[in-house]
Image (tube, rainbow, N blue to C red):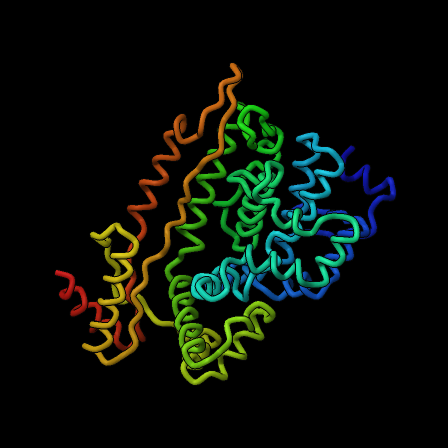
Length: 388
């Protein structure tokens, strides 16, 4: 039964009109979860953090993304022929997969993970100890739902071709106005199956090109949008604000209950972080002095070297300097392709595109040295000499 026919049958209680997917339908249980304070908080957490400083339309939120993932997961469950019980579990997991996000999403997590752990772990704790867990436990096992990412059916949401990735690429592309994230979600979903032999979600040979297109779209969105130079600078300034605030006694746990505007207001009241927040709010950002390709590839050694360079530049020029190297965005691709002959192969073995994307990422990632605008020229000229 299609979602539209299911809705007409009277089994739903709420409909939300989404800018990407159109009508999205929720049953009574799902409606109660959406109406909780923890879920409504997602309306005030930007999906793309500080990308709106470059792309003004990028003000969509984790709320919109969550219901979009919920919709795509529902469609995929139907296409895969999952049982009603399994489909309901996946729908609930999809709805709640981002419930633990901190203000400005991953940008806070990058700094606070040592204190708070990942947003997935924060989300599990939030659900199991709060109102949502109470609602879930009336009919289901809340802990089982929140651990679904480790189950076979959880791949509907979390895999390389899952509902999470498909929604954010399409949604982020639409709201930034770029064409890089346009992918054929219908084709991808139509050619997927839960394979009994591998115990995983696979894509049939007929969907290979659509899957490769998704990987290319993700690469282009990261290299041109998510890691845009100005977005990187804004994020680095925000990281400094968090670090300064925590060092002055600001409790990291506050991030788990606050939204974007609340955390900016709170950090603005901390002496060490206040100048950074003023720079973000007024868009008086640091400028790129220069960038360079690092010779070091080991992450820990590279981090040590960038910190040392940052300290040297600060001391030499008596001003604030940030040296930043973006984490790798090309994660190992592990989804498999099923050929008409029945043979199943990892896409990394059969697609030259996967290897090319990895190589391209390594060539494009660079260390960026950023500083106040008035020091840009001086640091650009003399700072490069320190690297020789």
